Structures are given as structure tokens and as C-alpha cells.
Image (cartoon, rainbow, N blue to C red; front, top):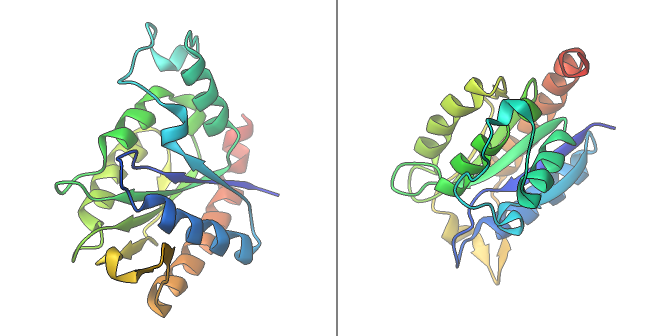
Length: 187
């Protein structure tokens, strides 16, 4: 079974990312097309890039980089759960994307963005530029969540039908792309 890493992209104290990501994780498991794993960037404690050699060489010296490399390399696809901070993705995500290189290649990426009225769409559109430079396929089928705070009750994310349908579509497309890109990942 293909492995999907659902990445909580914000490391900010008081973040709602884990709440949304837990729902994404459960929805992915219910979808049944992936072995879905929840990955929290905060657990890796990645400083601003501190490896002495370029990531294309994969000659990592630091344990945090080695652990992050293993996590990224183990996945066939990704669902990034990301907020919009000042019309941009969180710096923790940009830093994490740039920590490794080949581990990202030929893998599809779904985006679950959240925020205020825009649902994090500006953040999602911006991160797509970085993803394509890493030879990833960011899907057009993404899941924007506007006014996310209004959908959290007692610490649990309660999506509406539009969000749930969007997630199902995203998982189905992630699976399709993951299968199609598999020969490229093997080479």
C-alpha cells in the first residue's frame, strides 16, 4: 500500500494545524487508498538550514536532518496541512522543504490550507512554486478551509460537506498521481 505523509506545517505555539491534521488523517484512513501517517514538523525541531553540504549530496551530518530525510523518503505522497501567515506559507514549511532534495522527487502533494476568509489559498499557491522546483506534482485539487476557527468545537475540527468532498477528491487524485509517478521514483 502506498504511504501518505500528512504533514503539520506550522510549528507556532497555539497553532490549530494539529486539530485540522487529525481530521485529515482520519479522512485519509477512511478513504482507504493509503497507509496514512501523521507527521508534525515540530517533532523534528529543524533549525534554519544548518547542513554544511548541499542537500543533493545526501551527506547529512545532523541527526535532525537524517530523521527528516528518512521521513520524507519513506512517503509516496504528501498532504501538507498549512496555514497562511501574512499571505505566505509558514517559514517552518519553507525551511523543511529545502532541507532535503531528492527525497521529494516525483511525489504528488495535496494541500489542505486554512486561515481567514481566503482559506489559506495565497499560502497554498505560493508553496506550489517551491514544490514544482523539487520535482513534485502539486495537485490542483486542494482543500481550502476558510474561517477555520469557526469549524473547531471543543478542540475537534468539524468540516462541512464541501471540505469533506474536497478531501475525498484530493485523496483520490493523490493516489492516481502516486501510482503514475511510481516508475520515476524507482529509477
